[in-house]
Image 1 (cartoon, rainbow over the protein chains, first blue to last red):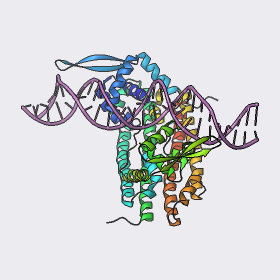
Image 2 (tube, helix red, strand yellow):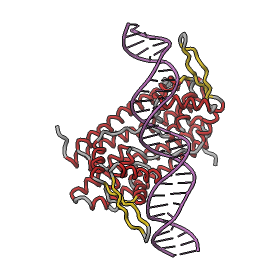
Image 3 (spheres, protein in one colour):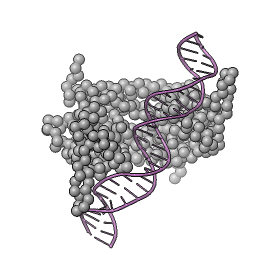
Image 4 (cartoon, helix red, strand yellow):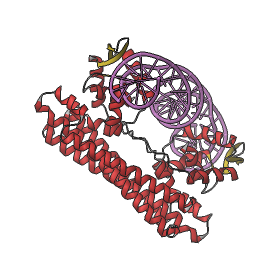
Length: 197
Length: 197
DNA sequence: ACTGTCATGTAAAACGTTACATGATTCT
DNA sequence: AGAATCATGTAACGTTTTACATGACAGT
């Protein structure tokens, strides 16, 4: 159900085609809510069916058309209702921690390579988050720029600060994951002996 | 697919009935991998069908019987293969952060109450994690005690330290969530004015 | 002419949630 | 006798993943 609101949030910055959405998605909302193309297109159709969106056909080349989605009043109302409704709790479900708790069953090499994989993934993710945060602060993030253009300047700080607040939390999470992986690698060295060269 | 391995991990401590599993689950593995009863029972049946478990009927009262599940050699092999296999990455999907990024759309009261809800949830969860961590350190955690009894004493430290390592990571996560919610509440006060009394 | 990007999906399977359903046993 | 716990699910629905599928357009 959150996917629907993630899409409404994105379309709040400007009308977009499904393709635009799926590209912008990966550069912004996906940092908090991942979804692949194959989930986005059907959901857009359902949202139009439910009256939250309206699509206007836009010419594309000599023959083709593409669908540009616009949020309807009902869509806006649904989004406002969602944002004011109580939080759904996130279920704990993390393969990395599940494995970590039973790492005594693993080979030392496999344990090390998993912790390194975790470390590398979160290091790269941290870098992405920090760069994205910076584009929010300096207001060069493309979706944010479109969004700000639709609101009066006295609202700009509120809009930016909430997004930066969310990213600050994500950045802290990423840093914690990197630090945890480091401690894990040290633990494996301590318990299983130094790594083979 | 991880549910299957979470169940194998638990059954590694001792044979149990589905009911025992679903109770123990919520006190240990559920901290990293949540699952309700209605998912556990069917999965146990599938695991038996796939040869990972064997159930032995145990008398229960004058008429009843219950099924006690035992891990088979195939189950043990599957678990070892899983623990040594590369990590599946966790998809980002967190309603709290999705909402936080668009909190400019929310009423100040709703924003505050959501952040407080997040704060309270993670404070309670942090307390549970810390208490569970302590029962691991002092080895009074019931499932851990059963597990240790099945391994030679020279393995006990390895077994305990990996579990404590996992909980340390979870505890850091929970602390970060509490701190983030606090910063969020301060931000709402700053941007929307002090709360109504 | 070819390559990459734009554009839009479908289909099947796996996974997870929610609500319901039922009866025996043990404890007080 | 009644309440709590033990025991085991099913059914319906919704969400997510994975893999596949197709073709037009734009730039070189």
